[in-house]
Length: 197
Image (cartoon, rainbow, N blue to C red; front, top):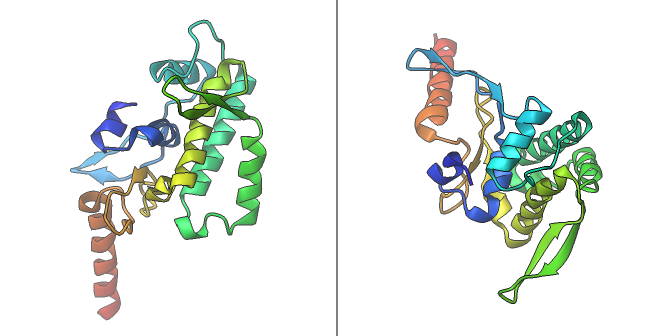
């Protein structure tokens, strides 16, 4: 779990998925006169290895190859594409679902018994990317228990950050209403004023 997932109170069972989706930062707005810098925490195979190691998803001696990086980036891209849709619309975009299913096949899971008597989904892969199977398991578990519906992408085109919707009716559209929501509402208000003139 990262500082960001802790700060925004993302449930532990979705923390790796949240962090993985947000490892790409495409925010491009100005806040208090400062342009937000864009970035990609997974810009290279080495950076992917560091990211995974920080979350306990990579064996110390495992090596991430450029081909593995490409696979991880494809997984992230398709997860972000899936999460950007309203939860009720996610299964309706057939092309998107097919593409996600295709990449999910690269991260097979197997059921294992835990010491506490419960069951868990674990990676069937045995290479450096095995740890990303936990992201896939969180995606599956979240869809099964309904928490995935609360993981959404900010509706602001200037943000596109994934957030966990803690509102009671689960109808939030922006990661932060005081920032993204306020910017969008102000922009629409100004557009209405210009159109009225």
